[in-house]
Length: 199
Image 1 (tube, rainbow, N blue to C red):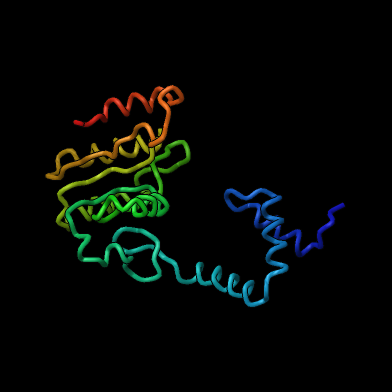
Image 2 (tube, rainbow, N blue to C red):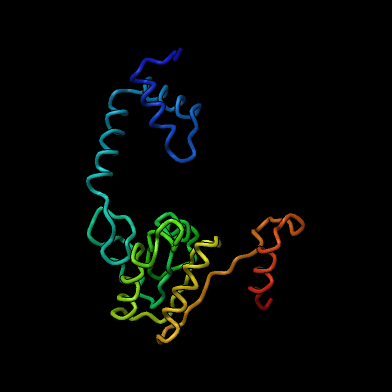
């Protein structure tokens, strides 16, 4: 027998479908919302409604925005000629948080995964090629994840760009700061050695 009332049980079930939330975490959040002031829960519900109604993708880079063009694309100081290709908005935000990149982005909104039916037409490859032709881009930085799909996507883009007058680079992968060599996998060590720099 379920001890929760049906309405609460339904909320817990829906919350537990969110990434990183199990049933216990979902139950804690539901209990918090139950005890929270009404204006707090109503504001949360309104934010979720607005998320669905107002958030769209930037017409230039396909990052999420509530305007036609995202703040990164709208910033004239970011027109450095460097274009960083990422898989998702989450990847863009991670790079932005580092503060290490001052150029513009292109969000693919996925990676090539033929077994899942995701080919070049299902991600933003055509739009990327169009941007390279129309914008003053001197360097493409491929920052897809080091997964088999991310690597396949990076190689596919590299093949498409090989005859274009643009420098193509790939972000380096290696040992994380504070990491221990003896616990690092073989592929990461291999990439770290291949990507070594002058010291």
